[in-house]
Length: 225
Image (cartoon, rainbow, N blue to C red):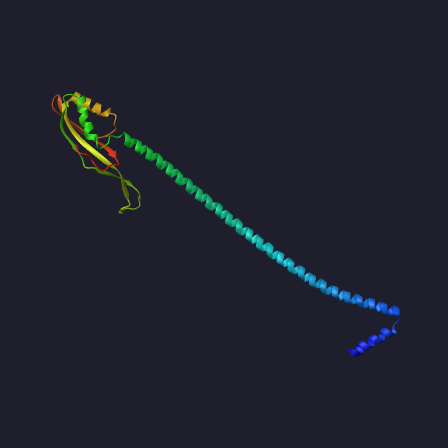
């Protein structure tokens, strides 16, 4: 190595000043070229790394955007299902409210069970000559409404919400008297259901009728005759 340096030194001393300057310029150029090449190579590597990083970020961004799109679509779908369920519940509640109001209105117009036998007796005042042979209240009957049609044999299958109150009155009189009584009963301010009517002639023009009427209420109990 020392010999090479000595040889190079002797060579430089043997050169003229102009030649020395040229050699120095060439040497500086070679050194600059080598350095620049190394820097460019490192710079290129840095650029490649940056591009790879950028590509990875773009890929991750696209993946995240795809996930956001899928989640958003799922949320929109679930929101639509929830909205339909909410509307169905609201419609059911409105329908139930309407039907409840109709039932309450009907019940309010029906003769109360505490007044049904009194009503049957009071109408006799408008029909002279009729005789009351008997008036009987029947045991209260439950009116059950099915809650779960599939729950056969279980306690939750039906629920009692209303009660049927029936009374049977047996009258004796002429055809016209009996007809007038039924007309009065039909035209009373209260509403009630006619279940059965038996008419039997005893000795003309007298006859007997057995009339079964009933009402419905939310009260389970009768009041005495």
